[in-house]
Length: 390
Image (cartoon, rainbow, N blue to C red):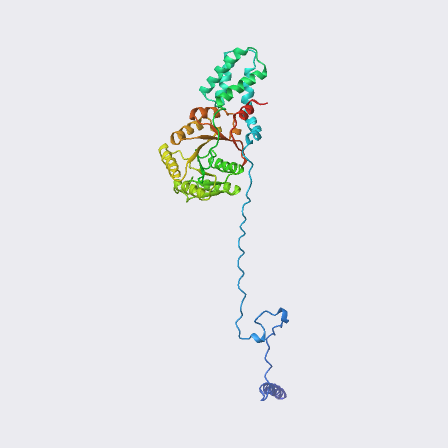
């Protein structure tokens, strides 16, 4: 009985405690817990406070600064070069000729200096000349002349042998030929030079170097990029012109070459320059197509000016292949002179003789290296002396 009463007492105490806790929790007038404040934004000093964040700007629209304009690209004008004059260039470049041509000269001098010149020796001399691309007919003439002179002289000193060979080489090259480049303007009209040749012979490069040479001689030049079938040719020519301050007239890729040539001559006339040089296409797919195109270019130019020079550019290293190309162009246009490139890179300098004999026109310019000023007026005596050495 006592145990039962004890349990009742414990239950009653627990019930009273629970009721007291509920009373305390829900009693009238109890204050609610304070609300949690959000973290305050730190106030910046005036000099560091961004615009639009002050109390006075409340409700205003923030104005962002305008975006910075992209910097204008800096256009650097190419520096205009002052090339050296053309006079004396071949003398300065003679050492390059001597490196490639002296083997021919030494061989001929050694053969002619032998005590006994029998038929075998003369055959060797003839072979040396033909190998050097002198050509069969000029070689035969030279050998016959040398044999006659040797018989007259009898005994021969080295100086006499050298003199004989020099005389014969000069005679075949033709020291009396007019190698003048006709670039004198006609009153208010410029002189016009038409540059022709197969692509790969250095035609466009030769045109650019010729422009440099003429500028070095004090002439004003305009270039015509009439090789419209190769965009690279027009770009290359324009680069050459910019280096010496010469304007380049060009047209759309694949456009009419005659139209470009006409515009170049018109610009040259308007600006009263001395010379207009027109670079033409060098495709040899058919002779008929080439003839039509070059003929049209020349006819269109002659509506505005006179074509004073038609320069054929030949690669000296191609030898007899170059001769065949030359003959095709000679049938198409009236060539007035030859520019022989890469003459320093071959021992076959005899092509100077053979190409002149075949075409009946003189070599007027020679390329003697890769440098911009390595195009020189051809000097027969300097050329022969380089072949024979000192």
